[in-house]
Image (cartoon, rainbow, N blue to C red):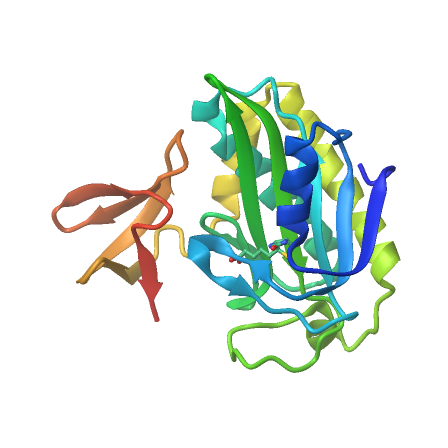
Length: 242
Ligand code: BTN
């Protein structure tokens, strides 16, 4: 991972650029598309991703998970989340949690967001673009629920060293995924899942309800236990109410 590096001082979205490379069939597996200044970063649920230029990691990794069925695509989310969580844990003494589907939280604050865009061919995956926005040295955020490594430790980090170490952690779980170790990945993901088995308020559409997360099913839906029984929700269907 990262042996082939496409660096752009500025770009709209590294995910969009990486997807274009995939469409043009010019993508080598493990390619990293990275920028210092992402001007139209894309997030989950159609949100934008803002990052101060030159202070954070904003990059996309091209993978070829051709061994996964389209119905198994959430396994890649699990593997990527676990890799990032390991990396964060290697830098921070504090608890790191994975907020479903794959936000990274440190002390309840978001330090990293992931946008995975899969290229589906028939019943399989021909490519995947793993977009990662990891807050490293930024020290001011407009959102009070955001944080960075620097804010957590006071250290100023070298971005390229951080990228190398993160890619190494991602590779460990990518290899596990390639070996078909789904059960292990499921267990590890569940162990680190934010708010698991804690009673919380959730919002689905206009409905607000109480429940406790019990797990994530095979297709990546969040499973919540409520007073009226177990309910499952897809990625855009439910959110936490704080
Ligand atoms: C989220 O939390 O909503 C996901 C954010 C993902 C942001 C990253 S930054 C690099 C890559 N390029 C993008 O346009 N988005 C992802």
